[in-house]
Amino acid sequence: MAMAGLYRRILPSPPAIDFASSEGKQLFLESIQSGTMEGFFKLISYFQTQSEPAYCGLASLAMVLNALSIDPGRKWKGPWRWFDESMLDCCEPLEKVKATGISFGKLVCLAHCAGAKVEAFRTNQSTINDFRKYIMACSTSDNCHVISSYHRGTFKQTGTGHFSPIGGYHAGKDMALILDVARFKYPPHWVPLKLLWEAMNTVDGASGRPRGFMLISRLHRAPALLYTLSCKHESWVGIAKFLVDDVPRLLKSEDVKDIRNVLSVILSSLPTHFREFIKWVAEVRTREEDGSQSLSQEEKERLAIKEEVLKQVQEISLYKHVTEFLSSEKSCCKTILGTENEENFPEFAAHVCCQGAGLLSGMSGSSQQFCCQATCVKCFKVNGDKPVTVVSGTVVNGSGQQGVDVLVPSSQLELSCCGCGPSNYVGMYPASNDVLTALLLALPPETWSGIKEEKLLQEVHGLVSTENLPTLLQEEVLHLRGQLQLLKRCQDNKTGRSLPIKVKRQEARGLSQILNGHIEEPRFVFQHSKLVKEGPHR
Image 1: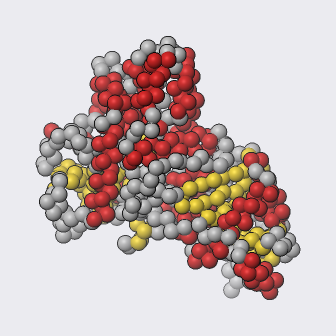
Image 2: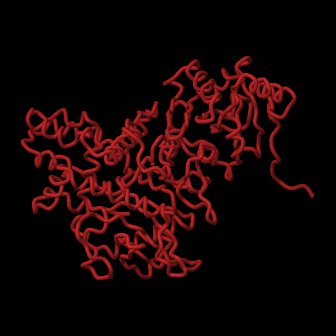
Image 3: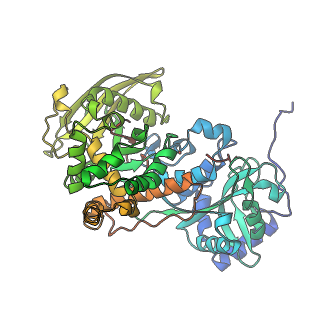
């Protein structure tokens, strides 16, 4: 009996040429001989079919991230860390992507969030000749891959907006190989590059913006160690605008006389949902069933690096100014930052454990489905090392319960944490003063140029300059600055070429690529103060 539904589509040819056809095979052999299929082999090793009709962007990105050997820092299934579509949710809820697809700008943000270097171009920001050069460059290397956003109609195919990676290039006939992730619909196929450009040079009806392409490659450093910015909560649009556009105008319009005035102008004007924007990176793991308190060497190394970054933040002069301002009775930003309730760590710890359980179960962002029965803050020593701070909780949902441990970077403040009493919570996790210090350092250098008094301007430049920062903190700040610039461009629908992040040297070898909550063992991002629209593509 015949079943309802569709079994694939016939590939319209011309203009496309089926990869497995005689002509397609000949194009492949000639391209190999000319050296423009180097990227193909890594991509084909991780070629996958999108698991949902609207997941073409997620499938394309997962395929490229795996081809680049970027460690997601999160378990997929069993003990394996692996990029899967279900893990690509840091910029848009998966349910929303499943319903409407993902936009070009959000996919750019998502690639950056997943730990990749991204250079993105809409067709109105580039030319076909530039596109050809980028295709050639990535086709002759396996260190860079191209994801194209195009309209299927140009190729006489059914459907509208679509994402897929470019698998290779035939220079003689100027044709590109599309590794179509909708494998249930069309096979991989060659298309004329000029026609592919025309398919990209179409307007996404929902956003009113042209489509385009993005170059994805590996970062040369771990993208975040302790702090990160989030574009998941919709408030990021206004906050990014406030930090990049409004803060310079405020400083220019106000007659600030000293550092305290500068901080007051900025911090007293923070948007309501500011707590959703900057987060700090911690690690979460399932509690050992045998009660073992051992840490892997990787975990110990990462904690040590995080604590060193935190120590470096707390040792700079700007941190002291921020701390004094926040502790002032006249400080008017306590409600926004949550500084009045920071001692309420048990409640915060329960929230943290629920979010960790959501991530470990593959339901990141679904912490509301969990209930934390009990939390405890404790310390233990590992092989004579200094005490490690752990927040432990037993989290339950409809399918059972699990023990969750969150490894918390400790500040350099004196603390006693080997019990569960309220007095033991002080100083155990990054607080608003160090989070704000890091963010102020990450503001664009031109932010401060509107300060009228030259002496004060020089003093501020001395406080926020990255030149004299320790290397780890300098890299952390430059990464945050790059994130902020990228988010602002996404907010402006200007997803053009990503800005380079200059660093002195690579530190923390062995750390995986992370951003917006991805590090090497199963862990998640939450922010101390509180634990990223264009048209869809299908």
